[in-house]
Length: 407
Image 1 (cartoon, rainbow, N blue to C red):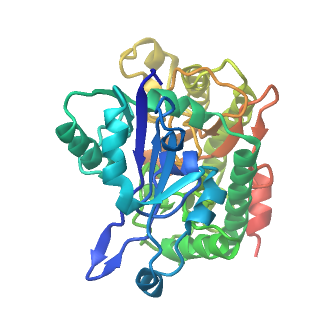
Image 2: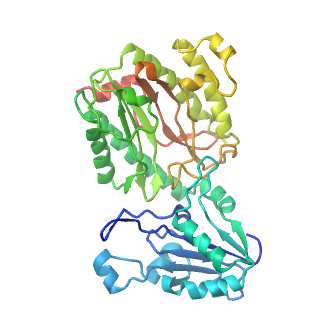
Image 3: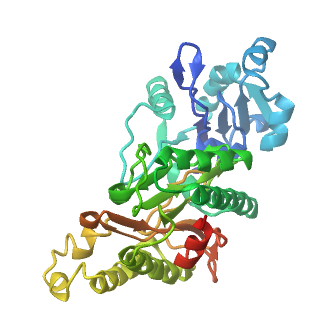
């Protein structure tokens, strides 16, 4: 940060569901990353140039009054918050307004966080947005700065402890797939398989799914974000499962596409093996210096080759294609990779050069809507000189999957 600055971060709020009940709480990823505090009504103030050393780093937490403990259970004491966060000066949230006045008077620049994603405009209804708006109204003469350009590159580089946590999330994800795949058979409903995934995740210590799981059979394998999961699975269908366990707020993310009756048809197998070939070739590319754009460039070229082998494109289709919408986009319309961490689609840009310790997905796919066949295969990869597949034990070969599903 520039000199004479303060950074202020706020936790996620509790969202009401009805009456006096709330939706499950999930902490703001930025404040969790910096403090490790996973409870509501938390704030962090960082003012390294403040004349009072005690005010250079302050953590504000919810007051664990006896009344609140009776209703909502354990909340951190100051001593526990200090031990978890490493922040020595811990105050109760009621003290924030008076301390804020002091911090602002001793700061010229104020660093604040709002979610930033060039492909998604957030509606201005978040707790962070309301906090920023209120602060700028109350202190209009300060210079306000974005915290994301400083914080996001830090979040992309995973420490050894973070990688260990993500490996555990991926191990749970693998166990969930192994259980769910054995339960798949004609006549079952998609939500029954979702229940198998959920059961295995929770019994292995996951907090929840890292995103709404996709359990899509038949023609819906070609819908990229299908989450209804409410149809019966038919003999001869494929089942596409895109899912992941969340452990200690870190995400796993996997996709497998399996035959409902336990055996791929020749056409399903051909499409599957085309995707698998690209998947296996792409994982070794996640080395330092690569970018998502470069990964995409490789996959897009290979996709043209595989789609021609499958009879879905011709050389003439490629020669005559619109450069703004290449011919392969009819069958492969998404990117091959995204960053993963505290959020399943984590912070990070497609043109950022990979560095050791970054974690990204690898997820090629082919979707042939006219045939009702959609195939996607996905794992999570740690960037290294020899890239590390975080789910090496999740079956991916046709023979492995058919053997797993043999009743």
